[in-house]
Image 1 (cartoon, helix red, strand yellow):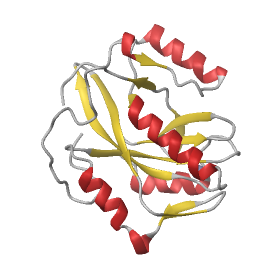
Image 2 (cartoon, rainbow, N blue to C red):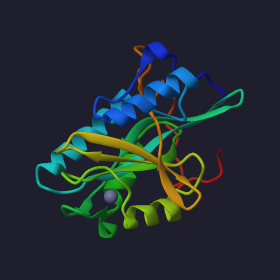
Image 3 (cartoon, rainbow, N blue to C red):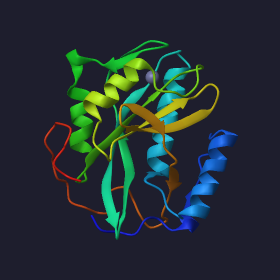
Length: 204
Ligand SMILES: [Zn+2]
């Protein structure tokens, strides 16, 4: 969809960014003034809460990020508006959806209530830092290989966060911004539209 990226009064760096990433964020603002990835405060809070909750049991959290693929003039960007998750089989260093019980996830997807695109995924590394493991890379390159797909990794114990995107064969860190709009709910009053339960590849 054609829309303006959030203005600079309504964006901020995540407080869990490392000093190096904070600097990269500021440089990006100075150089370009916009980002390729914006995450709503609401979606961010849900991801953090989920990661903290399972982190207390020394388990990883995971879910999908839902949002819009946007463009304004020559600038393409993604806005994450909400997240969904389901029953997880997770331990301290691995996580996957419980394939025997995907109903919860599908129910959440159906209930999400806006015309969403799955724009990526998030998961947590409780206590061992933010990076893309070999397994994570495989997940990224098989399920999230579109240009608009990104991954967010959260360490709720060290309080660290990073975003990644596939660049060629590797996953590179991606500067992102948290955004909010006082008047905007994640659903913007849109009527409920159900989408097919597959990762959508037909919209750029
Ligand atoms: Zn991982």
